[in-house]
Amino acid sequence: MKILFLFFLLIILSPLPAQAEAPACEDGSGCIPPNSWQVGLALGLGGRTNPLVDGDAIPYILLPDIAWYGEAAYFDNGELGYQFIPTDTFSIELFVAPNAEKANFSFWHTSNILIPAASLAADAPPDSPQEPSTTISVDDIASRNWAVDGGIRGQWYAGNQQLQLAIARDISGVYSGFHAALTYRYYTQWKKWQIAMSPHVSWKSAALTDYYYGIREQDTATGELTYTGRAGLQYGVSINGSYPLTSKWTLLTRAGFTRLHAGMTDSPIVNKDTIYSVFTGVAYRF
Amino acid sequence: MKNNKGLLFLLTIAGFSFSTSLQAIEWEIIPGECVVSKPDEVCESLVTVRLYAAESVIRNSCLNIDNSRYGCFTSPKIQLPLTIDDDVLFELTDKQNRLHKRFLLKHSVIESHPPRRRVRLPWSLF
Image (cartoon, rainbow over all chains, first blue to last red; front, top):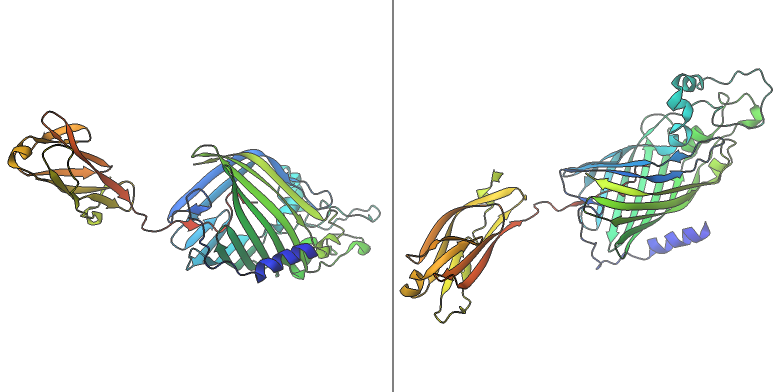
């Protein structure tokens, strides 16, 4: 953790080279002409581990990529936003996006897909006459709701480097908390591979952590399992690689991990301290 | 195909290079370029091809457009209406079809708005 903080400290304290020019923005390499769509579909194999007790891993089989950019407004893979004065080296945007925390609880949860009625029943506190359990699983607790966040993000570009700082809060009244993230991204090319390496650190407020990972009375009849989530910092790294096969087809691969913060991993509903994700496949751009 | 005469840049390209033939001939083509903001836009223009040479040389000169014979010169100037939706190749030959000069009138697309950076990495839905 200390090493990662030192890494970020070095990045922040070392000024981005003012003379460095951002790489030319080319269609298909993370850029898009204004007033146009980018729609694609990737087919492959991969997944994301789930840190919850009895939580199902999220499979990555089909990855859509849907983006629309106007002159200033945009929609990018679920995020709706408005960008102010974008330049070659800086942009700032206001955005609204779903909070992804809920995905751990139900994204591919079989009870939500196959037996909707059962998932409704899960909203009620368990009233089993059995002896109180000393463990708790995601199947036992009341459902958590999807939340929608509103936030602001600044992005700085210099040469093949990018620094991104975002802060967002719940605007849907679900968890009533905040989160923030600092992401550094380094772009490089090896032969025809375009590679982006992204170490990141994020902070989640106590309200956010407690809503999703706290254990309350409606979750368990066992008092000793109740838990109040705390704020914390977590960090991780992701690596994305793409290899253009033709103008339409691209080979995609990505891998990453996120080390969860103690305010979350101390929860009895969490039994892993790291989330891993990996995907390899081919993508088609329509 | 949309007309966009307003975006036509009337660039003059004068053929002041020396001819490879023994008899000097120069030419001028106006406009020299079709500049549009979208690939599907066209320029509709009255293109003027003017020769600067001796009368005998002019009367022995012919114009090919995109490798097809358009006609031969009876005066120093030919005007032809063109709908330019792609590059157009002009070639000046003599009546024996020997090539003297060539000029490519380009159909150029200038992005009126530069591309925008996506705020998220592509394929980062999850």
